[in-house]
Image 1 (cartoon, protein in one colour):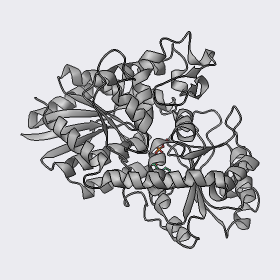
Image 2 (cartoon, rainbow, N blue to C red):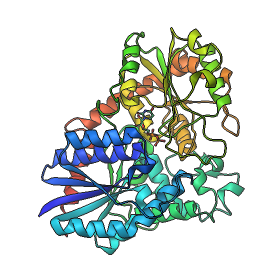
Image 3 (tube, rainbow, N blue to C red):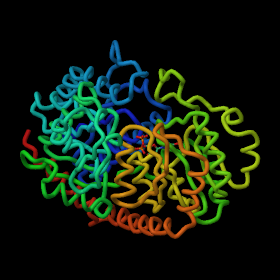
Length: 472
Ligand code: UDP
């Protein structure tokens, strides 16, 4: 029977891409393996996700997408993203169990690789005696923090939301309690319990596959290797296989406007502003960014979306066309037409960052975006919005020093003056130069990791060896 690796990504483009890229690396290394990717129905997703799946299906036949049937009562898309994904996987447990049984009638399942957000499927795999690995889409820093949560959080004197303290984790600068993800703030919340469960399960899984590369996070990798994050037993084997980022095709949707425009700009002159797959900013913040861009006098490529719905009840993935004349200051588009390009909703970020004209990136600190920037050698201004992004900012600004910090209010508001100053610093000033140079070194490391004999290829070989040695 054919040997198959089953993968279970989470919702969200970033999570899906990392999983697919990992699958491609595994089968490239060992074509005797095949990959089945379980997908929950696409009713939460954007069209770009559907396009991406279509492209992969067309180009990589050894990767099969298995669409799980719809639930009768799926969680409503208006609940917070984190709770949505955990509830969703929880409801899918029996279906996943049945699906694994059906797959195992025709193939030998060597292992399941779970996205850490698909943690609720861990017990299903265990009950079927299937060896389980985790793919950690967030880098060694957040993998370490995830493994450490079960040690550090229960031992604090209360919930993070009630404390003003610093979290000291091995190999990282101290993280202010309020900068930890909101999902960890309340001990009595479901999200907290889900995270502790993920931390527990990850510590006992067969391996943690991490989307990072040697050279980017050396202090954290050393602490992981020394077992400093798992105090009560062995740390599971870690595989640093990244950067798992999308290649040239698949996200452009036939729209080359951005790349054509970039080709007309001078080398390393353009600042890119894109806020992840879910980032939406309020109208006053959009106005302020526009004013900041004008003040900075930098060239820019900016993806603008509609503000989040007032009552927070909107569909998280919904992307209706924004009315730019209504959202941006009067005359802004006209005044900046020589220097800037505003794109509605979505742009081919990977290809944009790799373009020679790009010199800086205002980034929401989502890990895929960070890796795409590191690979391309583009320095960052950190503008965290949601999830673990404030925690990532500490790592990016103080830990690995690839980003400048933006001053923001408690509510996360950034003034036009602050944005303009940081953009000038990043693009033109001496203090920005240190970061620019360091990021160029990271780009060399990222590329070296992915060629034959590079550290990430060696890690893939070790991972495949481990997957194949599983006795079924
Ligand atoms: N992305 C893109 N175009 C956009 C916005 C996002 O191609 O306009 C891609 C981006 O290149 C990255 C992913 O979506 O690969 C976002 O993942 P990340 O981990 O950075 O953030 P998340 O969306 O998970 O918060």
